[in-house]
Each structure stands twice: as C-alpha cells, then as structure tokens.
Length: 577
Image (tube, rainbow, N blue to C red):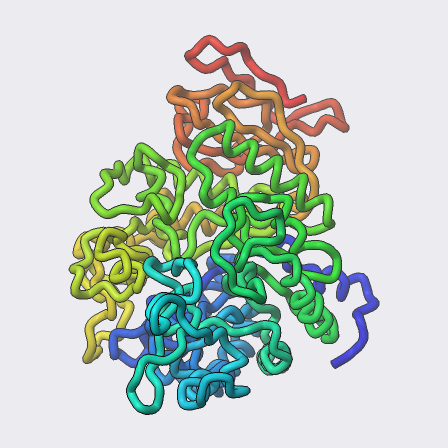
C-alpha cells in the first residue's frame, strides 16, 4: 500500500485506463498449452509476445476461477484459486507478472451478483434449516399458493424461465425457493448482508495484491434487490426497479472505490451494466464510484450514420458531465461477432432478437466490421477488443446442438442459439483444426468445434498478408499509439454529407467513415494514414473508413495537398472546417 503518486509520470500512468486498448481473453478458447482441448494459462503465457506485438495495453480475463462451468465460469465456486482446467494460482501470478513485463496490465473478472451452487456458502445454506443464518446470505423464501408450490414472485431469469428454484428439506419434502436471476446453478447473493460486503472487499484485495490492475464487474447493476421481493412493476420510477439499477447499489461501488484508491497505483473498476437510459448509466461514473462502464449502446447500435452519430454524441456528453472517459466496444463473449451481425438486414444487436438461421452476407459484414474498427479506435476514450475480432472471425452458427454448452440455448428450448458461436477456439496456424490452438501432440479435441474453412483466418496466414484484418488492427494500434491526439481527449465533427461520419482529433488527424451506398469524396488532406478498404479513384468506398493527416493550418502551407472530387451523388465538395 502507499500514498497517491505525485510525479507527472506517475499521474499519467495512474490514468492509463482513460486511453487504453484492452484485449479480452476468454481463456477457455484462447490457446491450449497442455493439449487437452481447453485453453489454459500456459497457452496464454506462450502467446504474450503476440499480444504485445498486436499493440494492446491491457488484458481482461473472463473468470478463471474453480467452477462447475454451468455458465462458462460465471458460476464461481472459489474466488481465491484457479480452475484446474486452466492451471494454478501460482501460474496466474506468473502470468500477471509476465504480462506486466511485456507492458500489459491485467484485469480480472469479478461476479458479485451470484456464486455457484457449489460455493461453500450455498452448500452450507442448502444443508441448513429455513431461517438459519447461513441462508441469509442468499434469497430464500417460501413459495406462494397452496403448499408453497408457486414461486415467491413473478420474476424471470435472464436466461429464460422462472428466476426461482425450489429446494428439498432434509426429509426429502419440498422446501423453500431460492432466487437466481441467471441459471439455477447461480444463486443470487443478498447484498444487505454484511458478510457479503466484507467478502467481496477481501476478494478485491486478494487480486490487487497479486498485481491485478483492475477488475471488470459482471452484471454490476443487478446486485441490490427490493427488500420485499415484490412482483415486477413496469411503471416503476427511475432507480426503483425491483432488481436492476437500484439507487442503493452505488454505495457498494463507493466502498470498492475506496479499496481501489488505497493502492499506490490506483486500481481500476470497470462495470458491465446494460441500461437503455444512458443518463442512469452515467451515474455509475460519478467521482468516487466506477472508473468506466462498457458502452453497450454503441455496441448494439446498427450500421446507420444517424444512429451511430447520436450514440457517439450522447456517450461523450454524458461521460464528460461526470469527468469519465467513454469506452467503445464492438463485441465480446456474449454477442454475435461483428462480421456476421453487420452482414445482416438488421445490424443492431439485442439478446431478444438473436435467432438461429438468420441469413448474413459475410463479405459485406467483414467490410463494415473493418470500418467499425477504425471508427472505434479513433474515438475519444478507451477501446475493447474481443479475442478473434482482430482476425475478422465470423460467428460459428452450425455447431451441433449436442455440443452447445451455453445455458441460454437449453433454457430457450433450443430457439436461442446461445453464445457459443462467438466462443469457438482461436485459429493460430495450419489449414485444418485445431489450427494451432492445441499443440501438435494434443490428446484432446477443442472443446468447441472449429470450422474447416478457417485456414485463411489464422494468425499465421494473416500476418503474411498486408491486406488482412490482423494487419489492419496491428497498423491501427501502432498509429493510435503514435498519434498524441488519439485516446482520451476532445473531438470535433467535420461537416460532411449525411451518410458520412467525419471528425477531427486534434488539429491534424481525421477519421472519415462512409456508410452510404456510393463512394464519397474526402476532405483536403496531406496523407492517408490507414484505410479499411482500398480507395476508389481517390474516394472512400462504401462501408469503409479512413484515417487522414490534415493540412497544417498553423503554417498556412501543406505538403502534397490532395484535392478530391465530390461523390457521384452530386454532393458538393466538403470542407474540414
């Protein structure tokens, strides 16, 4: 522990998260070091040079704790150890240290809303009689109706079906019900209990003391429930939903912030909060609470210039009001991969609308995904890259239902394809599965099947291709690191045609994204720094983005200025003022 840093360099380092590019590592699918078909910490450690070379600043690891894997590790049985399938606690400590040696900070995932039904607390609660102290750490209630055969209220699980499961008494008779907003194997914790508060503060210190630079907080808006557990009220006032975004939750994060700020290099708190009301979302970022939250409004936004511009403007305005940086996210382990989503007729994302068998144009989707990458990487704030995004991987939509493990699939009766399609193990090299994900002498097959046409998408194949998506990301991250005006800071829109997004970062950097159906003229510029697609006779092609070096207006001169003609639609040439 120590005091706040005082030097300018330390202050800059302490605010690294305001501009960081954070790479999400889904350990189970990243790299298999021991050949059993499951990704592990040994595999990640061997690939640290790849991540450093890619150009990211930090790594966020999905839960790596002991877990029965009822929900991909988000059913945690022990927060102070590593699941044996991934390695050991000592290996995790080595990984955190080795990553830091490569210039990469580590963010660990904490799941405070619930634990596994195999967690010692819940096992003790099940063994105890109704009304016992060990049950007070969860939400046990008698049922309604004759003989308590109906759930205590009408809440539904986010994974589908009721949010309550009934227990059995010691004599085998039906007992109380317990609450689980997710799967039955994930009982919700009762955050009115002081031991729940204390335990999680100790969990934070456990990982911070081992070098973790921050935590990502799963389902951060769900922790606090209405004490009476009433039925849903769809006309509730803001902050008074029965289990989502209740005003009392902010005191938890003020407590956690005090823990995080107690380190000589303050640790970072990052919230996963799905809220349509962005003003309510910004409340989590007030001074003394979380540092950043995931920008799901931007992630869910369709490929539409007006909707994207509104999302960007609203995000920046509300984040600026509380002094926090915005974040930009295109994908993660829960959502359809961008090349697949952007190739559909409906390019937005919503869990309720995710269905199997939706047609997609992968060529168009990848084109838009590449443009979206340049857009997100040039906006003010920090950026998240989900593993495989830099390879342009599509969603795998033909997994045998017998192989699907995501509970969303089972609890929907097979209607929802689940999230396993974005969790398929990464292809590293070769022209057939397992594509270098596992070593050559592997004894096990990848835990999810890899498509047989992924040979051109491997890291090895794309490294040799300057036009590949991997090359685009590597170049973009190198330019971003070299440009002082990128990352955190101001931006200003450039007047442009209606279906073109154009903005300036600083005086001489510009990003232009053409969402129209026709090539678009570019503003006067000195240099094309990077483009997601080849220019069309000097114009920006449809569904493409470009980074430009603008003329030096302070000197009144330009170097090799480029003057371009208007786009075919007849729009007059547009200026950069």
